[in-house]
Length: 251
Image (cartoon, rainbow, N blue to C red; front, side, top):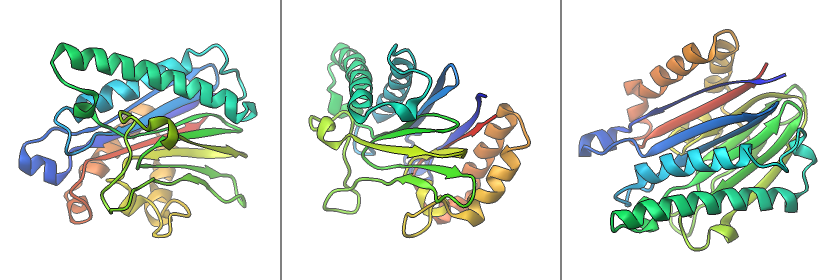
C-alpha cells in the first residue's frame, strides 16, 4: 500500500496587492510505504521567506525520507528516536539555508518560516510541528481525528519559526495510530475555512466533498482541483494570506 499526494499553493490577495510572491511551500517523498511531507509558511515580515519555505520544506522531507532509522512502521518509533531524526533533518535544512544566506549577505531571520509535517504509513505515524499551520488525520469511523494545532505567542499574529534560535524548544511531536483515511497539512491561510472553530477537526462541509473528489482522480488532476479551490476569489473574503493545502490518501 502506498500514497497519492495532491497539493497546491495560492498567493493571498494581500500579497498580490503588495506585489509579493507566495511565501508558502510544500514537499513530499516516500520511503517505501512511508509518507514524508511538509508545509512551510514564510513570515510576511521576512524579506526572503519564500526562499526559506522552499528550502526548508524540500530539505527536511528529503533528509527524513533518507534516514536509515526511519523503518517501515513510523508509529512504532519512540518519541526520542523520532525527535533525533526530525532534529537532524532540521539542522541540515538550517545549514543549507545559512550557507545560502551568507552568500547573499543575509541571515536566517531573513528567511523565517514555520514547519508542519508528517511521517506516516496507512496505520499511523507522527506529526512534527514548529509554529502555526495545522496537521490532521482522518481515520475510519468511529475514531476521532488526530490534530496538531498551531502554536502562537502572546499576540494574535505571533508564532515561532524553524529558523529561530529556539526551534528545538518549539518542536512538537504528535503520535497518531489507526486506519488512516486521509492526512491533511495546511498553512494558516487555509485554517479559517478548513478547520472547525474549536480546532477539534477538519470542517466537514469543506473537506468532505474535497476528499470525495480527490479519492476518484489521479494526483495531477487532484492537485489542479486544489489549486482552483485555493485560487477561488471567494477565499479572499475569508483570508488575504497565502494558502497551501496538501492531502495524502493511502492507496
